[in-house]
Length: 180
Image 1: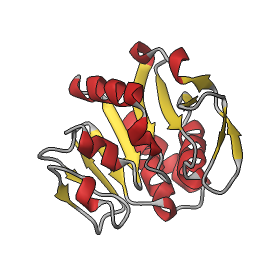
Image 2: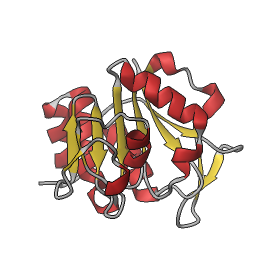
Image 3: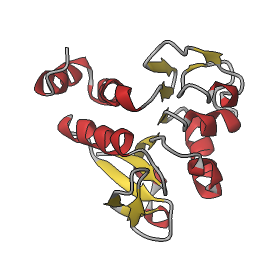
């Protein structure tokens, strides 16, 4: 089984990160959180400390099924190793997902050129080359998925479940969460 790697850095949005991990795991998917800091303990945007499963240098990207960036901070854009891996992974046609502020990382890497995308209001300017879909909660265009923000985390995560495990699994998880 391949693994979904979800990255954490100082100031990440708790709902987007942990909500996504929760929904993906309810879907029976293997998800590992990865610290981009110098510690497995990463302090989120609302001062909640979270213990990551792995450090960045422990990740075997050859085992990755999808790379996911929660939002809450622009610090994801400061990690050169992450950006290198995102670019290589996406350019092989593999799945990459980002929500809230984090689609800016994909825009800066040129991964949104000619693609439809969304992001948190005010971050549209960083979606270089994208056709903006700002009214949509989640936008899937080829191997790139973008989400708008914290209140739409369940929609974002369910779309990832559907992409990786199928519509029946998405519907099963949604029903368990009492999502219409």
